[in-house]
Length: 158
Image (cartoon, helix red, strand yellow):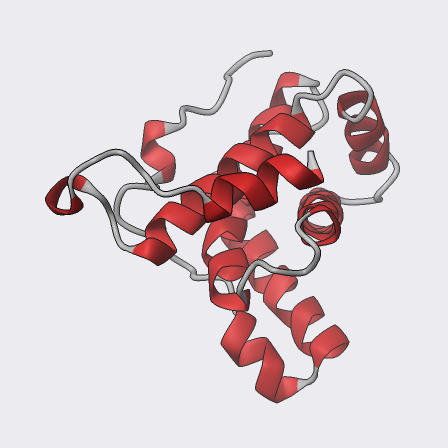
């Protein structure tokens, strides 16, 4: 998949410029697609569920899963994804991981839980990267236009 991510990032789009999103928005969408493929990979999905199951609490479970996925994307892309793209995509990935956890019956995902996990993820990023870098990489606390988590319904009762 490393080649796929890199290849997709380098390929020009066939859409007219007026119909395309910003280059960063396109990159964010590619990261979210890559994350979705990782999450639903038959070899990875059970490992993610197990990781979240053993995390101790829902916030930690979500943060650990998102960090694992984002690390895989960075490694597979040769660390070519800009920090601001990763940070923006991370919020959507957090929702996707929440859907997986809820579908697996691990815990109920609420907007409050997502917000707590986003905050905990920012804190962890600050600890790992240092304050200056963490601000540049900070995941948004609100979805970006075109990437609204409202368009990704949570699986209820699964």
